[in-house]
Amino acid sequence: MKEVFELAAEAIKAADVIFLAAGAGMGVDSGLPDFRGDAGFWKAYPLLKDEGITFYDLANPIWFQDDPERAWGFYGHRFQMYQVTNPHPGFEILQRWCAAKGTEPFIFTSNVDGHFQKMGFAEQQIYECHGSINYLQCSDSCRDEIWPVSRLDIVVDQESLRATGPLPECKFCGATARPNILMFGDYGWVSKRSDRQGVCYNAWKLEQEDKNIVTIEIGAGEAIPTVRAAAESMNGSLVRINPRDSHGPSGTISLPLRAREALERLDQLI
Image (cartoon, rainbow, N blue to C red):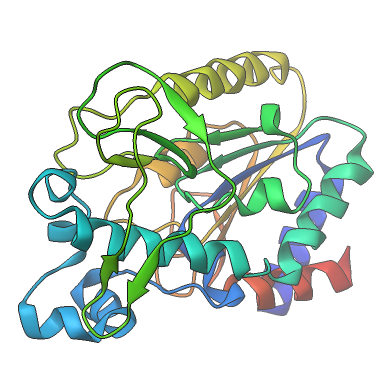
């Protein structure tokens, strides 16, 4: 492992610019739950195991129509958890490495928590491919609009994981609002914000054609391989940090560790 860490550190130091690709595993060291498989989801929400409800079942927009209290029990709890959770020190390490380059980095992430923005990365440097919990849209699709939200006064009953009291409403028609997150079976997701981020992402990639890029991928699993595919699409070195799925194409520098430990050990070398 010492030689692999030295190889990764040298790739990061030699690069002109850094591309960050982050999945759910990036947030685990901050204390956020790992929804990997039914076991991971039920560990975070054990009462749903008794009901036989999986993450795939619950992360579906139909709940905002059929049972909005259950839908907002789940997403309201997640919103509040993301708000009060402080990103782990690995975020600061990445920000420091990027700043030292003097070139604009870019972040491609499937995470919806907004923690990269919370740690000071610029909005125009981030592509949240699954949207963000910090924006809402109408669950009735009354119009193709979203709006930011910094606070949600949702009371969640921890016994039933159901919201009680008033639920967020669409600012245009008064119907129940929902997070601007791409869910399973989601044909009503308003993608315009993520689409704009995607335009910035593609423009950034074109600007890096003659530069030495290092991609640092963290906590991106294989179940939904969007982040891994983005990482593998880049030229240059790929450092893949993942305790379970660190393998990759030929030339991948694999670090089978969690995010914080790997980043702190690399930082000592850099």
